[in-house]
Image (tube, rainbow, N blue to C red; front, side, top):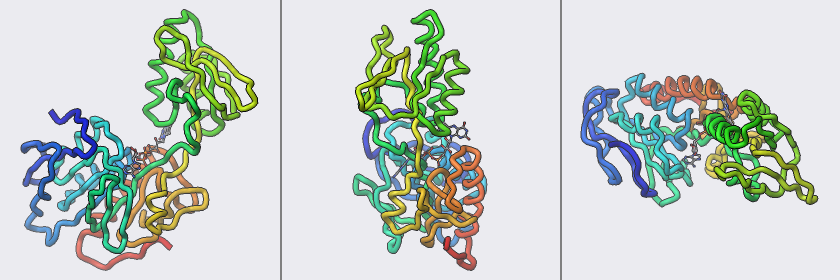
Length: 318
Ligand SMILES: Cc1cc2nc3c(=O)[nH]c(=O)nc-3n(C[C@H](O)[C@H](O)[C@H](O)COP(=O)(O)OP(=O)(O)OC[C@H]3O[C@@H](n4cnc5c(N)ncnc54)[C@H](O)[C@@H]3O)c2cc1C
């Protein structure tokens, strides 16, 4: 099955030479394979590389597939896990997904992307979809508390709250750390699950592991001055910023408040490189919403499809 694998450098793709969108062929895992043959109507197969594999990247691959893109798409994911959505995309004939392969260097002149493991991918068009990351380093002991740092965490928190509530036999008291939009959302999630949240905007120095039988959640935080707050569970919901370091190191313009500067059509300041999703900032603003990532992916796919067709070259972002 197209499922779990542990190697750092593995990738999945199906070898297949029919029209895009159908799932068949023999799956190969953990080895290099040649690119699919271009369709006879395509003069030279355009190579698109996508750095990042979150919702924006996934939406882009889907849109390109629906637009009958006939070149090759390589998706670089810095994560070792293989979510179902990505595995499904990896089944598309023109797509290869490299799991555990963070894009670490862009050579815009040579049009190549290197990964942390030293692999190099040539591209005609590169899309940066590296998303966002927490602003600050993790608090000591953060591994023992609940975290609201990706959209999937709401479901994880709900499950953990259910277990703690059953264990306590009463409504839990939750310490919620954070002062931005994510903390507001986390508070709504906790309230909806019956937790009484107490919010602190001060960043703790450490999280104290809980003593609950399930061992699920931390129950206290300690601040720099030695003071502490305790409850039945702790949730960290800290602010995030665009992950724009890869782009900045390649000389792409970035916004003062973070984010790769893009024009209205998702071009960056460097020709052949585009940015979508949480990594990008238009007019200094990062939208930071799934719906925004999805519509950016749709519009960028349209641009890429026309850029891969013969025609005049359009301008990069100013
Ligand atoms: C706590 C939280 C709650 C949210 N709730 C909502 C909501 O209710 N509704 C809504 O519309 N939006 C919500 N959002 C926003 C939404 O999740 C984001 O807008 C969306 O995930 C952006 O997708 P993305 O692909 O741009 O970035 P990300 O989701 O950050 O994905 C980027 C991916 O790229 C990978 N990556 C990073 N660097 C590299 C690299 N160098 N090489 C390879 N891979 C790399 C990352 O590991 C990650 O998998 C929420 C976000 C958070 C954090």
